[in-house]
View 1 (tube, rainbow, N blue to C red):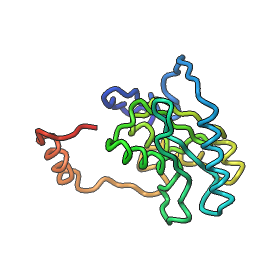
View 2: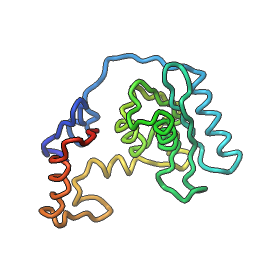
View 3: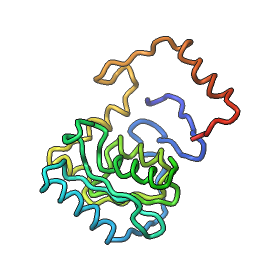
Length: 185
């Protein structure tokens, strides 16, 4: 993606260029250790119960746990059932809204690219994590290759990608733009 134009989506600051982690933030945030302990406990319980991998997450709003999640990838045969995604889905159901503005996510481990994207799409205010991505890698969960793939142009990625029927595909966006009562997100 280096040298490609950067698209700005509403109030979010995109990654400046591939390989660059974007703008540095000077804001300091403080987490609550009791919520992190809960996320870690969920992760450990998940392993010991043999339900899934060593990942747990808690979504918190106004000082209260709104939802929890654990990694259910193997037990549900769902590669998207990561702890953060499971917790986000439960929190959205609990609120009856796809936006989790005002919420913080506590995760036992630094979110993978998919979970990080889900947290951003849900409009969460903060992320607190216990283990680093490097710790996950040492335990056999290496996401570094995914981060590298995201930095590549689509035609350079390991899974082949090719744009197809662009003109016809644009009809769905045209229909969306014309919809007067659409819900923007």
